[in-house]
Length: 440
Image: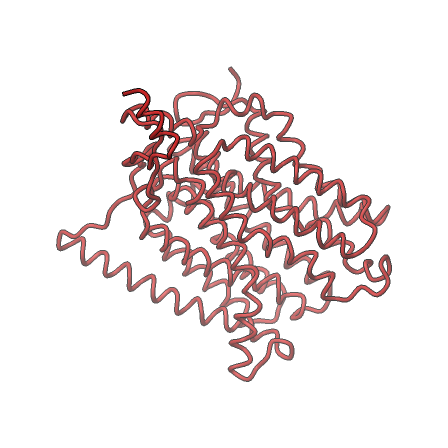
């Protein structure tokens, strides 16, 4: 069979790989079609305020936050493929309704709706990569999905801009992408390991009707908390680049070029992830923070667009290394039963980091007496100082862990936990009790 090696000694068909990439892509496209037409919306819908247009891009991120958790929680208990399929139906219908939306309020409601759908699918997409691949192939595919995602986002941003010149509704075509996984659903489900099946198997092993699991026993909680905090921080500072570059470089062409470098860096790191990890070895956390700091130092010391661009490229490249690397680590330290919820905790850091970035950075700038509205460079200085402090924390922790290991207190290494850990009989319902009594 033609396909790609999975790391399990089997091959995955190319159509399944393409379907996996599509599932990953649809988690990030809400708001994408709005960008090229934001300037035209006040003309299309007279009386539209700036805040309303901003809600079209911020709304999906805000809506996704609680539903990432909901999708992760549902995914630990029910059939993941059914959850994906019904969510794609809801997502696709919401996307189709953009073509007939009569007013701004409807556009905002639909933006929130597709944000909800993207939030639910996000942890499923990450869990599916872990289902389909193992070992070095899994690490590589987390990098490839990140790279393909950013490549598609770059191409789609350009394409939607041209489509908007023909007709302002044409960019919404990208919101029909969720219908694609529905065509592959029947075959794709054969490659997915369902938590529902694991539950049935565990129940059969301990001879009970149902089992339940304690989440903290099915994932390494200290690692999850540490990875989430780290990813939240680097997402926050990287988000500042696209937020404040247009205010620092008022020439739209220069600002656009610098922003595209951000996507380029993340995309490049995805395609070279395994090479980068072999170079960084077990110093990923320190190296990523160090090079993100170096990137911001270059952005601060010079106003030359070339130097700033190099700084953005360095920072975004190593951010792009960290993102798939920690997804891969979490797929190792979590059981499959808990994996969708584990991925939800991690994925929501992306949405929260992007949403709170302007509030945190602007708040610090105002406290320092240099608001970013008057001095956009202040945002980059704040990020540089924050990265310096974070690097110090990461280095101190590394020194402490190394010292403990020399005294025999080794940190728990990530070990793939398998399908489930310690399944426990679920509490009997009244119906179960009655059934048991009648059988006696």
